[in-house]
Length: 45
Image (cartoon, rainbow, N blue to C red; front, side):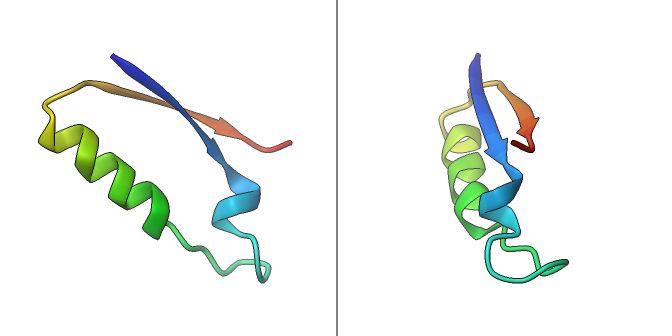
């Protein structure tokens, strides 16, 4: 199992309420392609 911190400050980095998940989506697809399990921790600091 792989654990990943998902930093909200990265997802919503440029403008309030405008979300960019592209980097995480690429990572999640790699994890899926490798047939690994993923645990995501939402981090808001």
